[in-house]
Image (cartoon, rainbow, N blue to C red; front, side, top):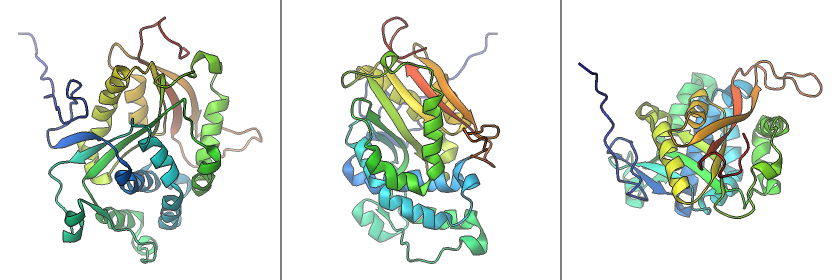
Amino acid sequence: MASTTTKPALNTSVPTPSNPSTLPPRFAIRRLEPKHSPWAAAIVMHSNLYHSPVWPIVYPTAITARLHKGMKSAAYLVDHQINSGMSFGVFDTEYAFKRPESAQQGGKLWWDETEPSVQEAAGPEAESARLLAQMDFPLVSVALSYDAIDPLDMARMAALIDTLPLFGELYHHLEILDPRAPADWKPDAARQVLMRNATSTRRDYEEHHLMSGTARWLMREAAAEGYRGVQIEALHDKVAWVWSHPEEPFRGSVVSQVDMATFVDEEGKKVFEPATQTGSKIFVHLKPAGGENGGT
């Protein structure tokens, strides 16, 4: 008897119902609005600083102080992407608020940098849990993007990069190692290349596989919007695999990589030590081969 594979049910709680997702029915993908900016920034900063395979390794101390510093400068990055109209979030439609005040406002971030950190006493996992409990809102995962024709202002990114100096270093080396000529992939108009920047899921929702389902949905959504390609820098093996192995008819190409365990800079220094993660720049081709720019 031939084996059968059960396909996941389609979820039409998305901005474009004709492009349903495969997320569990309790979750809805929604276009992010400016009011969601602090929540999105909190998810990005918390997941990166406490649970990334890179940043807690290279910056293992004073994590909470770094988080609060980053939150002060993350607004530009998050707002720029939300304003593009191509940044989306996954909302838990069954979310149970922890505080009545949060429910009255539809959700609230309760972080207070004057509160004493328990990190030194109980370890980063306990501090992560304390901060997570104060993220009392239904947004649980984000996929931030901006149109490549409207790039980030790096001068306005300086303060955020100062929070994680090796973040800028990593992107710099991925750029140097990129073999493509700019004319082979960069856009000359809007709605050509989508830049994915910030893929994060709350720690308490990782078991639901929201990243992969949202990523595949977003590829289809971007194609429907007319984009010919999506570029993303991935600092996690699962994220890199999903974007470099898209569903047909899309094609994923790994453009450049930095193996943090072995990489040495121009001065011969292992600048990312002791991290062992591989950082990847990936380009997803949304148009048929021969019908687009985008590099190989």
